[in-house]
Length: 249
Image (tube, rainbow, N blue to C red; front, top):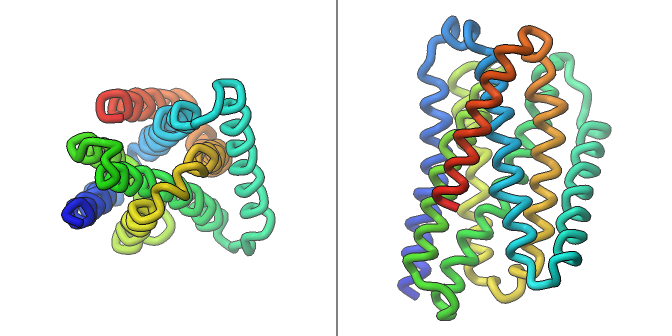
């Protein structure tokens, strides 16, 4: 069971990347954050959209054991379920007297949902290693890639949270969004043979939730302030996340 202890170490590091990204985002002064808010919001949106495509939708199709057409249908169905889920969250989440706080709650739910299949993927990789289906080095590469991606994602959660809750709570929210990954990873490790079949649809589900939250909660307020600055930030965030996914995916 040495693979399990190695998996635990790497799952801890995957979470640590999220917490580190959240901490770095909280180092800026409040005045500094206000000056670059539109860039930061656009940057966060770019990260989330790119992660939805390269971390979730494309792997959802590629990791399916079905034919290409059926895999595409399964991914589309999962994506649609993610959209419906976020619509229900929006409808039934209690209204908040602070619109920004209500918006952030939906964002937090979406990002946390996105991290569950990523944790499962790490657990599956190390579970596959113990079954002899995957080299341990490949499992480590999966964990490293997801961990590096988690750094900007942790920042993407804590940055908008600062406007609502302040630095300390923003850090806690950013770190908490990644806390589900080690839990999902342990489940995935021990249930690799059972849960691997539902990984494609769960990835697509998370992508739908992420895209909905980005379009409805991350980008609108910054677009109202400056379309150009938001678009510049979005472009840089998208390119960064796309590069990380391709290099370490």
